[in-house]
Picture 1: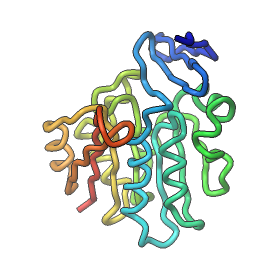
Picture 2: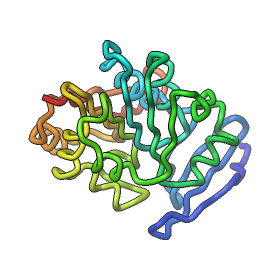
Picture 3: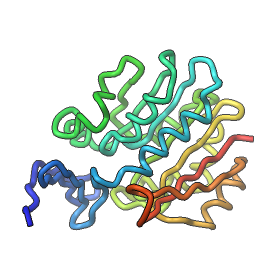
Amino acid sequence: MIPWLLIDKTTLVGGEEMSLHRRDDEFVIRVGRQELMNSRMHGSEDALGELASQAISDRAKPRMLIGGLGMGFTLAAALKALPTDAEVIVSELVPAVVEWNRGPLSSFSAGGLDDPRVELYLGDVAALIGEASGDFDAIVLDVDNGPEGLTQDTNDTLYTPAGLQAAHRALRPGGVLAIWSVSQDAAFSRRVKKAGFSVTEVPVHAHGSRGRRHFIWLAQKK
């Protein structure tokens, strides 16, 4: 078997190491020894961008906030589905992830960071949400592994009652909060509903039509 080649690494705020590895045309991003994402398993990331974009497709000049750049698959899917007059703000906390997306991972986002509709914010998406009031038609969160954070403990605040209420305030009437998760969480679904959303849970295959499933919450502001 061909061994993994270390491409680059960075140290997160909490002291953990995040690294990018390549094997032939396959890439993985790891935190410590834990695989965070794999370029061959992006079906659910594609679906996240597509579903959120479709939910606001009837709006004029839709404005979307994406929290978490990852390997760029969610951004690429959103840009493919959104109209030419859309505005997409991408918030990424880890500078190295942005560098990787402009370098070895650039093909996965189809050059999304250079799309004229896209504005990059290097920082915490929670800060942007907290400052907003009716500013977005959709907020898309592809942060860590969902409600159970992996890379940054501070990301957990996004999924608390206060964090969900902040997202509710940041959305325009009828706006959509779309959240990716590695696993289902009934307690979190109830939390989202209590924050003032109607909720649809969508199971999506990570790769192809079989095998491992991830979950997407599509929550519409009441």
